[in-house]
Length: 108
Image (tube, rainbow, N blue to C red; front, side):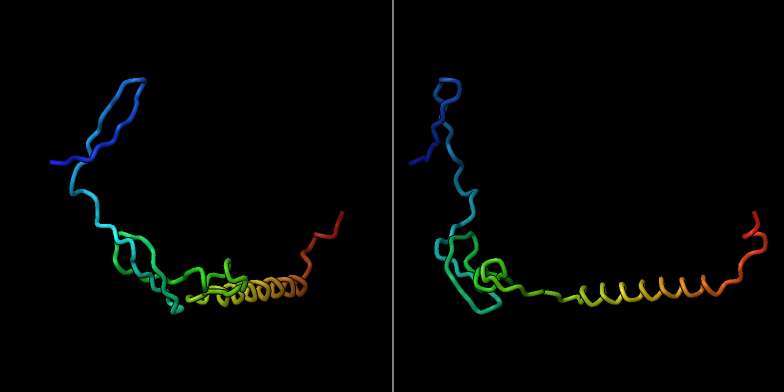
């Protein structure tokens, strides 16, 4: 029976730790990684096949191209909220100028 072991020195004494068998997942040194952009490459993993959304061929940091990945329309929602807030602000200013001055406000 062959056992693998790890030898470590703790405070000058020799400690031998035996590793447990059959507790580690299977390692695939040539796992296939597929990206949404169509690029595939090999990498070591505990899964034989992986699918990713962004890889080094389509990520803006590596390509140098700025591209917004906006599936929920967050940018448009933000712009709409901003325009609505500006319209409300200008509407309040106009209403404030149309108000009658209160009695006794100008007296000293």
